[in-house]
Image (cartoon, rainbow, N blue to C red):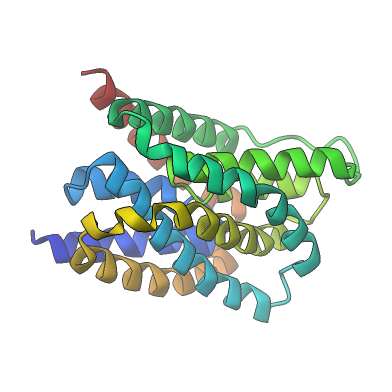
Length: 248
């Protein structure tokens, strides 16, 4: 199977995740770029930021048209993470590839566990104070910059539990947060983009954009619980593969 076909298939899956769940696309993009398309961990995290940022902007438009984006809330939450995303994005090039791979595997496992064990509601959630909201946004930005992930799988539960957004609006608003953090994390990496194979990343991104629109339509048909379970199982397999690779 050619690299182009693999890029198109992987891109479509990433788009489905972003459009359907409001995040999680980079958790598939990074391992796909490394294990299917031959990128190094550093190249994969940079390419993933490009793919996820552009695709998130596309998905954001679809959710905005449906009235599922809290613009002011999302902008303030994202603003707290921008400095951290830029700082860790600049530091990521100094981190060994095996460490990046192991850290990514751990993050994927945590994301899967959170999806398979959703938090039980004990009543109405009250929005957190500005300090906690800012700290959560900064932490999300730091993860985005270091590992090249959009952070939607963290942003959605944070927007629900910290800022008390309904799930549908959290999924849409998370795409605003992902887009902003992704752009900030990508800025210090622009000098390394010359090593990225754009002949692969371009089709990958195009397929992801189309997949994001299909993902939104899929989300309208399937329950959120079913989507999370499918994605969580895929993440566990990815985490096991990457951890094994990092340790061998």
